[in-house]
Image: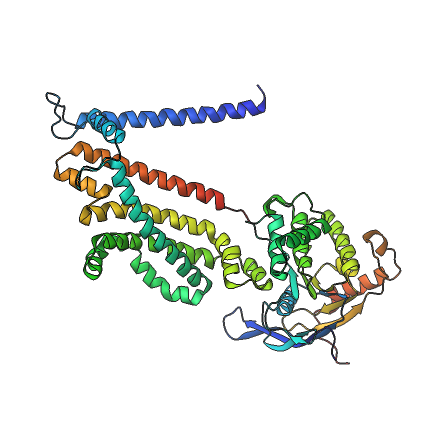
Length: 271
Length: 266
């Protein structure tokens, strides 16, 4: 056996161990869940449904994701898309605002220092706390939900962009100054790519917050969306569907995060 | 009518490290550079020579005094001056090609994409990096990185090229090769160059004049040495010139013995 294959051998050995451990964890969790759930009586699930019941319902829901039988009975695909649509608008708008404001703050250390206490106070506020204020001022539940998402995603991106831009090496800005780049030229050619790793780290935290916020906001004022679906199924006392929705929320969150992980790798650079 | 570049009575104060008051880094710096000449400033660390270079570049402002380039007072950076940095200052997210193109594009916005492309290729070829266009700076050695820095600086065809210890971070063997390449490029382009360094051999090899600085704080120009060794100069042959060691010993002697003394009033 030569060196290269020994290397690959070790790698696959590690991968094998990881997969084995992961599978064991999953089996353990499923076993605990099974033990904690109420056994079905006469084919009808009572109390907390077990893994088998959830798997059965999941299969049904996933095999017909886009059906629409009125306001309280829509396919899971439609619900997820409706949530993602709100996230796209609120998160998109907040990201543009946060990146532009973050760049301005990052380029003006005095301004950043002056604004920092307010950012730090606003950052830990649960975005849902704003909900009554938004409902009162704009009197539109969809708009209020989008604003809640906006608030949930603004601060991580803003803070990361500001500190990312603030720590850009002076040399890069000097080169931009020597080349007399315009403000936008400097923004797109130097500032954005230089601070990109920090900005994307902020965007990644923000998309997580947005996905958490949208579920909660929809539970409060929904009508559609995955959060509303959870609340609606709770009112229907269908815990099986609630558990299914929980798994879907996790899966979508994972996919969003993986997307940003890829983006982070694509824009990373070493100095 | 003054010289091509005039540095007049330039003085710089920085806040004192102790936190109270200001410290004078250098004072009353006065020298001139003729068009098409290569002038180097040599001095110990802390004499503020890089600050003087940055003031000429327009990246810093003097506390008093002024700089006039080709009849125009300098108060901000401009495309008529370009800096080659000690730590290269290449954009690590851009390829070699993009690093040069951003400069060509800035200098010649009216050119077509094809003209810009041709120009970028010409300067990359000039520094011998053809074939490495798509590489990121991180993948290159220090010597190759500074070649990109030189290509970027020359590509804007500045009136004045500013070299800030350009070879200090390059290994000794490569340094000599790039120094000679710079000589040959400069012989062709005849740019006006101002360089700062603390490498005496490098200064003699490249310069027409060497400006010697006393130690800081309150550094001053001690004297200006004319390098009358004929060009073209090569590293191997320049040391055989009868004046080489005379000049070298004079400068080394100054740096070691006399640089801490204040200028004698003549």
